[in-house]
Length: 104
Image (cartoon, rainbow, N blue to C red; front, side):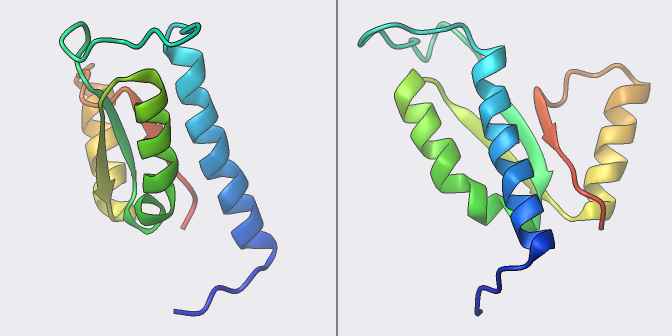
């Protein structure tokens, strides 16, 4: 699969990077070499488009390594992501901590 750089690809990449950066905003700041113990917190649940998951995985793995936590990625097709998100919001379910969406 050849990578083509166009405006839409750049915008999607920027949105994906913003999603990862938002992970920093919801986690407590960690100074020095101190890491969050895995047993202290439940894993961070992230739902995103399956087309973005492969691109984001290395960044998310690096972030998880830096903070010492665990991040569970749930890659879904657009229709499935919309359905899952709609159900979670209407039922006020804590299904996901972070959701990354993009218009199809």
